[in-house]
Length: 101
Image 1 (cartoon, one colour):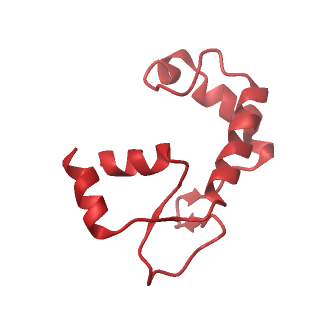
Image 2: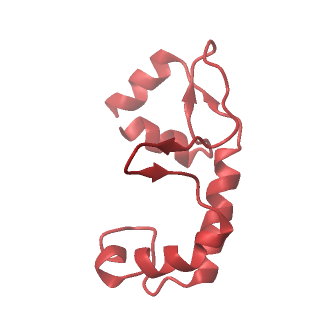
């Protein structure tokens, strides 16, 4: 999925064909036992506690150790902002080229 990394490095958060509808809000997924939802500012302290543990931070490139609640809050705002960017429009042939590199 190197092509998706290239898309994200270019400042875009998703790949979209011209006939795909644009979704502007982060979706939530809920099952009987699990809820996956977008981060909110209220999650910053708990995010820093969990993701900032040395065992976790050591396995990532982007999470420092220690990971303060302030840094977590900045990241939450960044994720929200990045998600709200217009989706990237990339042709299938360009995707194939990126995938081969």
